[in-house]
Length: 338
Image 1: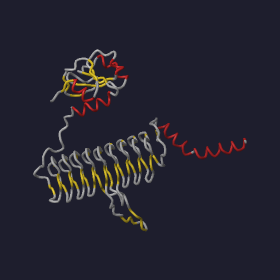
Image 2 (image 1 turned 90 degrees about the horizontal axis):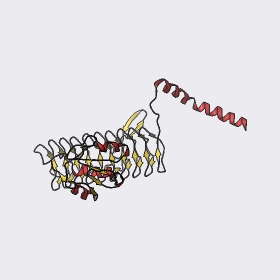
Image 3 (image 1 turned 180 degrees about the horizontal axis):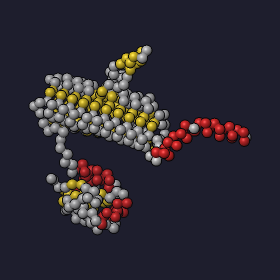
Image 4 (image 1 turned 60 degrees about the vertical axis):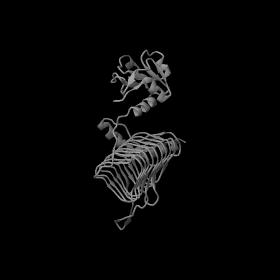
């Protein structure tokens, strides 16, 4: 395992060193779990008490916290961001593929950039373009006319349908399906008539999509996921959705069709967003929220109820059904008073 001095890591962050800048760091760890050769961070004051007993070789901390600390530290304004960048710097995650495996099936018309690696039993379709240093994991499929930008990584068993474009520096985790048909049907006297989904999927740069997440292709126009978006595991993105740059969507969220989500939004886990509506830039939707109407202004939005004793919940459910009757009675009483 490769190690770096505290000075090298601090220079990587453009930060200051307090203590022994020659100490060697090879991994990251938590304050209470780190040992020799590991670096941790203090970003929340409630963990400050752990500094006294932490065995980490160094701590990332703010200038204020560093004033009373006698150990080795990298001093910077945002220790958590610093920790993320150091974790990337020390990352030992293996490649999704490190060569072109003999069992990979690659169409003659496919174009491969320099340094492309394709794992065992992967399939690359007709007219596919893979940029430089793309990694395609074992068992993955890239359908015809799709494009994958440089340095993008598909882990094992990812399915990319036809006419899907991914940008550069993306990470697509195992089991993800990009470009499956959207849920488009017409009803003729009770019979469902399928509408061919002839749009594609367009994914920007630096996008990460979690395991078993699905992104449907557009019905006519494209489904779009813009630069810097991060999407957790088991999320459904329906046809013709547009997800703005640097938005984060947590696990088990369902986004119905033709939704536009703005830039820099945070969608909490297990949320449900109804179709054909828009959400403004900078909106934070709490976990478990049902969004059923347009959100036009930046802010925090929440719904659903908290867990409670079942007997109390049953009583409150009955009361909820009585709300309209109660409202009408109160309105009548107010009118009589007036």
